[in-house]
Amino acid sequence: MLISTLPIVSLVIWVIILVLPWQPWRTKESWESTDDKSNLVDLSDVTVLIPARNESEVINQTISAVCRQGKNLNILVIDDNSDDDTARIAKEIGGDHLTIIKGSRRPQGWSGKLWALEQGRKRVKTSFVMLLDADIKLKQGVISGLRERLKSEPYAFISLMAMPTFTGFWDKLLMPAFIYFFKLLYPFRVSNSDSDLVAAAAGGCILTKKQVLDDIGGFASLKDTLIDDCTLARQVKDQGYRTWLGLTHSAQSIRPYTGLTELWNMVARTAYTQLSYSITLLLLCTLLMFFSYVLPIVGVFLFSGYLLWASLVTVLIMLCTYLPTLWYYNLNWSWAIAFPLTASLFLAMTWTSAIRYWQGERMRWRGRVVKNEI
Image (cartoon, rainbow, N blue to C red; front, side, top):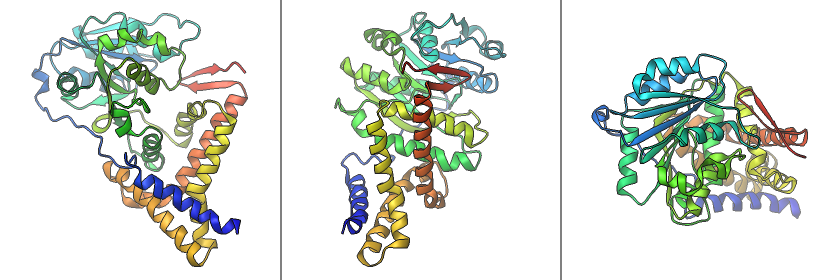
């Protein structure tokens, strides 16, 4: 009797996901740059903060794209103790409008990126601030377009989910699913509303008002957080401001991932943090992933009668909710067939994150290891 109810539980889960009012599986929340002549726009009221640590492979593309955004743009690159040519390359390309800030030693309790951003924030004198990762390439018109949205719409903080680079098998298998799962955890429509239930952001590309950062006390208010983008959005919302997050093709991550190991570490870096380092939440997550992604596939092969049909309908709903993300990134629909496998890999990455935490490692990224306090 118990076994006969399991496929129904899986079906109920997916029906709920399908009919949720905020439809987290859709891609409606998106924005694209449309201004091809933005290089003539005066951007003297905007400062771009780019924290950079050992980014010599990509910083040239990032800075070149920023320089094409408009006239008189202020660019601050905070060199976070790089031991390569990051600073030299950035200065050569950026010229007179780019300033290199040599990052000072990171104080105890700060993450490297947030300490770099705080050093840059203290130098900002403009009304608007863009926070841009060193591996994000912007299409022309992004900064001016987002600035106009801040001026004309009820938002004080806008972030774009940069388009991943799909150069190989593992990118295409994992990165669309990474964004899909992020949207399930942090529904964009709810986050973009005036509701306080969800606050989300994508830290790679954010445009906000300087006053907003001042009002939250700068980056000191989230100095030791690992999921700093969503924490920043929460701080901004708590101050009474509206935030907006959307997908885009106009900002693209250009960091090359050479294989599964790098992508695995990228997810494992914060997966257990998402669960608040809770064993209970980890076990609940595992159970939920089993019912959502494993059991329906098993049911197709093991069950018969109405249980088989329930499993087939569940799989169909699962795959249909994933298709909009694949289509948004112009990927073949056939990648949806591997979605249950992809979900299982993400669960394994989450367990990797938890095991590393139990072994005393809070975070591992960009050549740095942060120990936890357990």
